[in-house]
Length: 149
Image: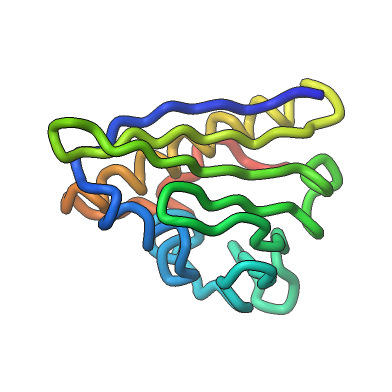
């Protein structure tokens, strides 16, 4: 199985970063730029929209939720995403910042589509970083670098 991995240093405490991952209003700000539907508690289901409101681009189940980790299992979306696990792990730094370890794992195979998703995840995680640091978010469509065509 293949995985996308990113490590991001964020100059904001985990208390600022964690809600941006754990509460559905967070990904609205740094990722989708559109309202997220569903329940953001453990066992809840989140629906992410990027274009039309009649069909979510991805639906995930919240499978882990704590002060230092949020994980989603993809239930609907691009075929390559189904069953994959998206994890955000937070580590406080001595200087008051946060190290974010991101993984999107369980891909059946490496592919051009996976490469594009990795590029976009890097861009959206940069949006998360900028917003948490008070410099403004850059969600979709501004954050999209590689088109899903």
